[in-house]
Image: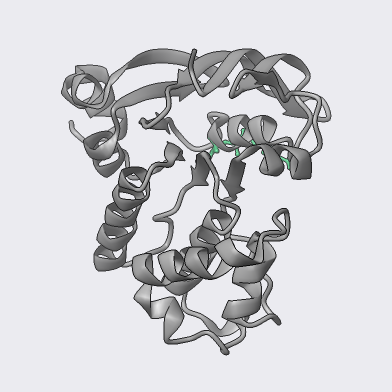
Length: 237
Ligand code: ATP
């Protein structure tokens, strides 16, 4: 049974149907990526999975349980965390306080320190800046904080929306390395990325989304060799 099983998912905003019947799955331990043009419906798919918006149709099953009618906080409690596009950290709270907010669904004091240490190991930069207000971090540091905060909930599945957006090439590398480290430590990752080339490199499998529908799927290696993918998403003529 897949860890995440999405069947015929539909979602939208007002009169707009942005996701028109998407079926995909993510197995435990995989990195799976969704690629597609601007406005294709990638972020909307993640939002409908994590409960940020309510699906209009279809089924979402996580770890054997239907979650498509649950509130976002209940979904986090089951082990599914979403790092949204644009990060959404608390600007006036310190780095440390932001990290603690990520652990709000848990009440085991003992595990907390171990989880903080894990985040510091993945992002040493954050440890140097624990007292600094989140809003004063650089873009890349804010992205690290958003991912670190999500990890504090000890997710089995992490949804990452455009983690490399707006970052310098060196920081993009760091973020992609961290995603692989997160997987090595046992979490499963569903990744939305504009940087299709790097996403396909680290992904076990990938889906292409166009106009709210899946048009192609395969292993990361298969899709990075596919002519239509190369033309549309890897910048080849
Ligand atoms: P991008 O890579 O540009 O973020 P995306 O594939 O993630 O694109 P979505 O953000 O899911 O695309 O958007 C899908 C469609 O839904 C677009 O037409 C977009 O304009 C629309 N949309 C997204 N968010 C909203 C919203 N809050 N209200 C109304 N329409 C929205």
